Image (cartoon, rainbow, N blue to C red):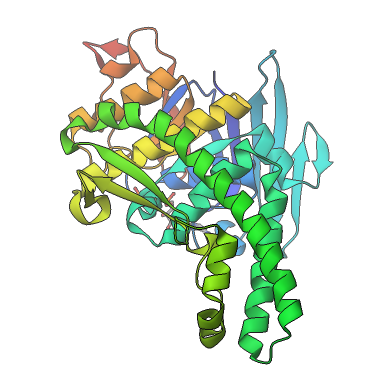
Length: 374
Ligand SMILES: Nc1ncnc2c1ncn2[C@@H]1O[C@H](COP(=O)(O)OP(=O)(O)OP(=O)(O)O)[C@@H](O)[C@H]1O
Ligand SMILES: [Mg+2]
């Protein structure tokens, strides 16, 4: 069911006054380069997270020459009715969040209200980027499914920092080091077990998705690398590497080195797959993530920037079909609407189309003409 009913934007990048709505379950936003498509997704992202997904300071988001931006949205409630959400940011740095007309201090309240997932060009990093990208992905899963592990993640990080600090200092007090080593081992094991559980839940959702989206590429395997020798506990691994850790001045193994190894027929997916195949794999991971999130929080909003890029029409349609089956709300941008195959929508599908032109948004009729949008 649609999560977001409407989005109003004032002075965000080139969107001086834009109204995106009424929103449907699926929303296709098209326009030429520089028209404001990504900025519309950015606005939805800010509404749900209080931050952008693009690099650059918060000030660069405010329309040049203006003092603040305001984003306002209406979130549809499962029981009927809407709740209003708002984010305002001043050039001077102040930020105001509003929920149901009341000022709110908590970004996590916004996130609970509007769970969203983003697929854009940066999503390739999940496959081809540094392991830290995949650790963030796992930790996202862990924290959404097992909230109590947030505290263990924090305590793991603290113990690691303290232990590394002692190792770097050289002059060691063995009993002090021992305290942090034990603390580190306890929380690291819990964090790692949580990541492993998330990965097995992810695999269950991912496997059918990848075989729908890219059956041609062969079997894809997601293997968990926990960051230390799999045959021992972390505590044993830390004991074994104590001398070498002292020499190096930091803790060499542990969850801070964890990764997901993605292979296709035994070969590294990042080194083997074509760009389009990589995109399909990343989409399967993100859709699997959405299924887990939907299981926890109900509604999910997907922000998909330039869906057709890198994909041929048939494979683009496969992604659309998978999204339609999930019944999640989507905001999909593209340069040309003809690049989005409309057959997936069916005659009774809930779809809205918007044309963005120099920062202005206009709804477009979605009358079906021979299976294609007008
Ligand atoms: N702070 C700002 N004030 C005014 N205009 C801005 C600001 N920041 C960016 N812009 C402009 O906003 C416009 C919209 O950018 P956006 O990235 O949303 O375009 P887009 O439609 O996604 O384009 P593309 O198809 O190239 O991805 C661009 O012309 C950009 O130069
Ligand atoms: Mg863009």
